[in-house]
Image (cartoon, rainbow, N blue to C red; front, side):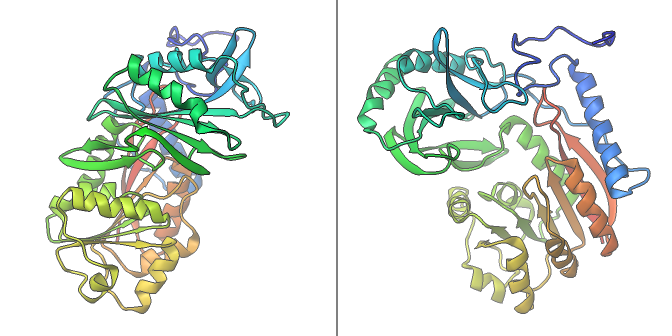
Length: 406
């Protein structure tokens, strides 16, 4: 720093600048929102060639701190013993002991992390450079609706699960009725959501609520990280779709079905497409949880305007091709919430061939909306408006919703 910006503020976390998690803590929150809007506008213009982009005011997160419902820490060791932490910025082999002080999770979860660190003393933590050790990740998921958590431990080799039974017994004693489940994941090389799953006690899922809809969230399934802001995000998508109750909605990359189910009261029928088989199973369970009638996929193909929801398992571009062969009636509105990498060119073309009147594109990466939006523009669609929604305060990440009309 040669000269400090006049808006620079004192940071809350002692690890700011070293930790790879938060990058905007030194910026006042209103300025964070302003900068994020500028990032979206600049990206849409530079990568999508959208001149005079109608980028609206950023919707702020209801919580600026303690907003995350999921956090994953890696176990490490220093001169003071075993700790749970996050990587130093730009390093895969250096950890910082931040778990007990991380302000993106609640105070109570920080207390749980502190207790787990106490119990982990003497254990062999995984060393990514040498490839030795077995204690690797600590995963915590929280239901804001229930105010309960599930705790997961990832190890790299098959060891006797009884070694960790005392951890969960002690956690149960210290945090009665707060920790409702615990599990082990055995995975030699990957992340905490892969490998052999071993339930240790209690429940492996909980209920979260968005708007007036409830959702099952399992220990390893995807769910929006900031549920309070997720309602703002989905309300924006619903506003852009401008649903009247008579529309057929297609929810592409639907995951556990949250967006389509969230909008169910304002549509006539729903088709969800998702590659992950387990997520589709969760989507079906979530539809039942909210008393939404379900059709098998073949029934929907025969009668796409039935007042029901149905979910297809498969890659979006392939399922769209199969639906084209069956000459299914086109949707009125398509909601797209793809991975960070965005859409393939084939997926864009196949979506456009169905000629939905509106396409609502949700993404955590402005670059993919810009790139894919340019392709939609070449296939008969016009960008009408874009609204960023801040799902990740204190970081540079920004979620956006874009509306394209035929």
